[in-house]
Length: 370
Image (cartoon, rainbow, N blue to C red; front, side, top):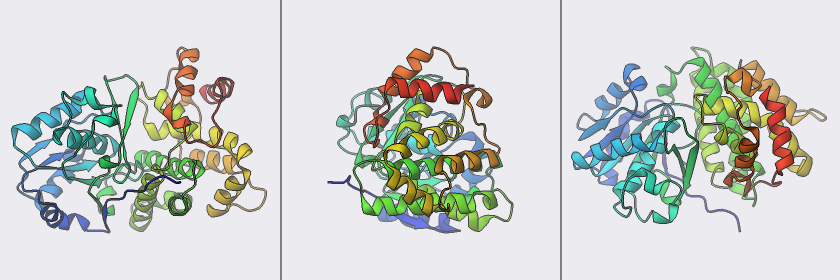
């Protein structure tokens, strides 16, 4: 039996932000908390949401770039102080994942704070309504069942997976991506691609999720370069669709590239950048064990007979100006034995069609470190 696919109500299209008030009314939310970050406040996107819904009960805008348990606790404190009854999350994966944890804490079945919930999905018994408004084109958190936070700033990230963490509404308005810097478009697009690639490879098969994953991967290859241009609205909309597809693919599971990226997420390097370093190498390994699936994915992204999937991924990352190694990304490789051990123990291995050994991860780390 394949994994259950739980998707939010999807509002997709330019100008979609205008229906936020209607969506909140349908959910019965009268006193929403807005969760976002200072960068989006500075870019004017928080003000745009306030124009759509001028009567937020409270706002929490201090989510850090790498989300933390303390940030979630701060947002939950704002929720309780204002007597809120639902959450609106405006941002990238850091904001959306923080909001998921807040929605679970507000459900009232968890004692304590975010540290008491992260990694303990069995404690989730209820969540309050959550509307996710992505402003990047990569994480897919707007439709995935996963939230990942750092227990402490600068420490490793830990994930929590539960179907109730899927937002009730995903409001995907590509107009909100116009202010994204090119480096973030590139890095988040590679993140979306990795969800599609590793989700497609993940076991067991699910025909509907696999179809979405293949479509999402094809969109990234076709549209990411145009999305970097000022007139790339259509391409950015396509990548937003790819990100949603990647979020759906996460319902199947991910794989070793995410094991590498999450273990190496203890420093100030963007997750999508780390994924871009790891994905070509891990995909090369997986393709040796599931060549038929690799060939199907290669066809979906437009490769011809004899063209190598991992080489195509590596070339795409390079063409976007993203680093090819951990060192080039600014990551400082410390205790390699511990890093490898953490990769071997990662939950991302559970659904991989091939589970890398300690020796495999040693070889991967050697290849991507320098």
